[in-house]
Amino acid sequence: MHDDDPPFIPDARRSHDHDDHDHDDHDHHRHDGDVSHIEARVRALEEILTQKGYVDLAALDRLVETYERRIGPRNGAHVIARAWTDPDYCERLRTDATRAIAELGYSGRQGEHMIAVFNAPGIHNLVVCTLCSCYPWPVLGLPPVWYKSAPYRSRAVIDPRSVLAEFGFLPALDTQIRVWDSTAEIRYLVVPERPPATEGWSEDQLASLVTRNSMIGVSPALSPEAAS
Amino acid sequence: MNGAHDMGGMMGFGPVRDELEDPVFHSHWERRAFALTLAAAAAGRWSIDEARQARERLSPPVYLSKTYYEIWIAGLEALLTERGLVSREEIEAGRCLGTARPVERILETDRVDAMIARGGPTFRADGPAPRLVMGQTVRARNIHPPGHTRLPRYVRGRCGVISHLHGAHVFPDASASGQEDVSQPLYTVRFSGRELWGEEADPSLSVSIEAFESYLEPA
Image (cartoon, rainbow over all chains, first blue to last red; front, side):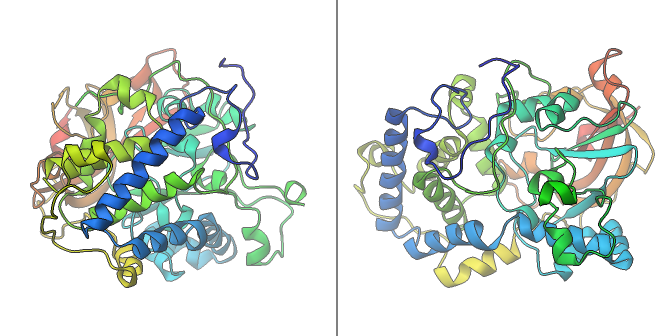
């Protein structure tokens, strides 16, 4: 692995367990022996906990289903698109993000205390958790592997521009880069700038331009051309 | 503690590799590791801070060589064995060898949505009033607690400005040792990149952290 490797984008259609052993970083690429060991260990732990009656199997399924299907970054995209189209909502998001986000039905675990940080000309915001993986679950779902990884957690606070460059994003040198390290239970949502040439777009159309990465702050929202 | 989890400013880990928004989990065991961790926590025998501490206590070589959910499983095994809910022998044998101990509650399927919706707010309306004010310049104390703390190493001894007051929140350093009723005023403190990283640093950079009052002193 070299620092000048191009950003690696896994193909979601393939099983992650079997791809790209060449990229032997420790974030999530594992050899088959390691995978079968941890698979067996987790399966055994699940059996022990269910046999002892500490956990309910159907509750485990419900937890997984919730974060695979119901709670994810489309929630946050809805919030951003509303903020772009409704100035009153945007102001409420600025002054009390927890309440404004709850207005749209998103609240609870890992989003109990929300702050929205707004990108603007000359100001760019970026969110990290250097100590673990704090992330606003109700609006973004569970964090991607890279957000939890050592490369991101180590570099976002000391050299954020090089991180942004790996996402193909190069803010102007005089743009302020404001990094937010989630070291307590406050969770941050980046409000990206509304892309140009979207006048008259509906909330749903605008939401399609709002990526997970733009709400963490590693990239801007998509342009209409990029989205099409 | 000054563990391997406290990564801000470290070097040499290589590039950040983007990934698509789906899938959320990259293998079946990750799904189960995630769900087991949440369901077991719902039994009420430890706080989120105790869970974080259990992961941070892994020795640095172990922490750095495990994937994210492997760290979660190692932390969960430690929490379960330390509280006598599961024995180390059972973990190694991979099966149940003894009887269960009572827990405060079991997370039932029909309570999952309510548990997620309720979350775990840490704000305490009856907590102490803040002694620091908006705009005040403060120094992050040069402290090295051997237990759990949320003051990252890279700000210790550095000066910043208070930019938000959040009221009193549960104090993680105490909560991690089982004292869940201790709260402290919480602030956002903004540091310039040059204060943190020296004169060579990018002048356009600032980094904000959330800091509890006992992490700070007037500068």
